[in-house]
Image (cartoon, rainbow, N blue to C red; front, side, top):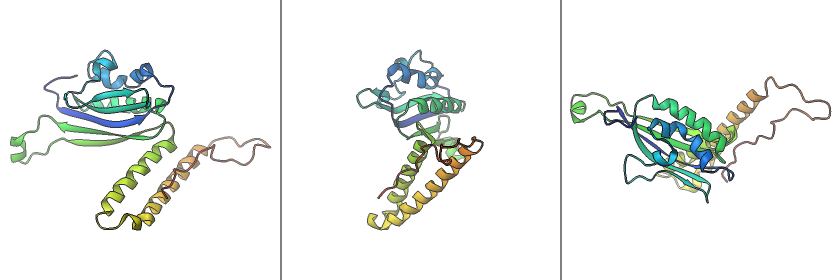
Length: 208
């Protein structure tokens, strides 16, 4: 799928903390949708980026970390590979993480711009994690970072505790709604089992 005439230049970027028991073979299988799409026969064969100055796909076994800064050429159907990749990474991740994917219109040029045509550039922000809680935690942390960075242009960071607290309330309510939806349809616990609970789930942690 690495063709010069592909309609998109696609950049995938993100760091994912992996479980300590996850080795190269398991990671290679999890990332199969990416390297297979790129026309490679293995992760090692497909890990290099289309740009030499980008590190590509790297696995740090000491830090149990997957690092992706990788560009390939492809079509809009690459989105299906991203769905499979996210499901696979959920199985091997140790914490929630964000993955950014940018589609650059490889066929858009100055002539198109001069004639007022719009490019087909697109940006996706994906989240992976071992549990719904971890996914939500990663979403919450990224939102807090973005909001604080924006508002620190106008306010001192110490003044933004109330804003962060409101964001935490929103995510706590979303998490409770998620847990409630998962509880629906469960048979009640037997006598001595206590009242129905959240099954060990916890709200995303708050910043203090």
